[in-house]
Image (cartoon, rainbow, N blue to C red):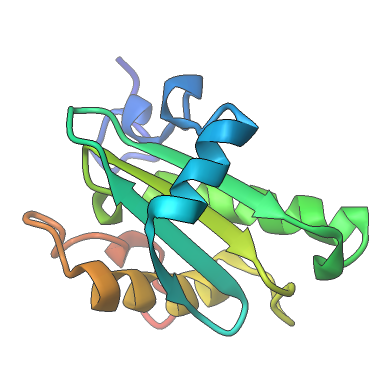
Length: 141
């Protein structure tokens, strides 16, 4: 097992395997229709709880977010956000993230500053999540 960037954490913890993705349109729409919602100026986050040990996340970026280059960048950064903040996505949950409009500076730090507090405010911090996201904070040296 390899270690990620000398942090002492297994690299597998920072993956986004297909088992953790909302794979079908039907599944994604079900989460949006039945799930609880929180909003930020640029994102909507929907979540429902089915129980079990798996968590699933889906990301949708429509054409209103910008051209293909912008949409792909936002999707890539949202996947990275998920990888670094899996503790904000509890086991047994399905989460769908939709983009209302692309943020003006679509970087990981900016998206984390917007999404993580909204998710914690809506669903509360989960046990063991006190260290969630400390490794990538832009304010720390």
